[in-house]
Image (tube, rainbow, N blue to C red; front, side):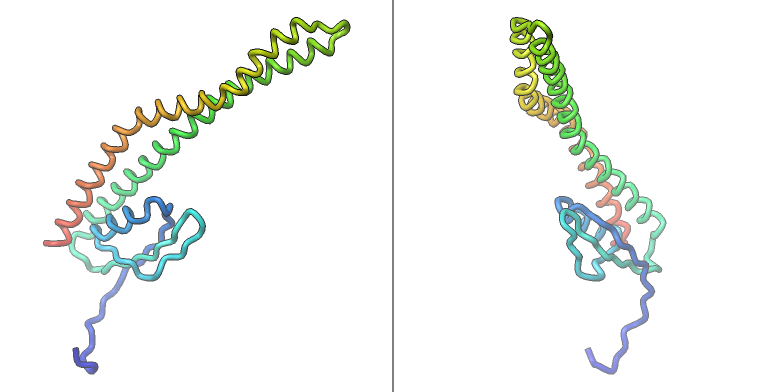
Length: 175
């Protein structure tokens, strides 16, 4: 191109989003289907990246592209919530088991410090207490595995919905 030729003026819409690094590529691919392009290099802040995007203000089908973009964002939020639920449910279940074990251990302590000490009751109460403390790990593993199997079809469904949404956006951009 001749240096004296001028590029036509383009007015841009700008958008900044924060994205978890694990989903960064998926966001970049999808936003391109809605007419967005990376404006500046990404700033990485730990587990999250900050994206600065821009899109031609006078892009055709802007309203529909924006609707599809929101649909994509809702699907991604659902996927992230489903993945988070795997660990949160497992953590709650493990904590409940550990707290029950702690209650048994506290009862065992009160039994041995009673006047006169009731050693046999202390031993009887300490066994489920230790089982509760040690079993919390196994409960966490089991509940997280069950929950992962439960949410995987839901996540796959949302990924399919994202694929269709991006296809629609790409078709709108192409013509």
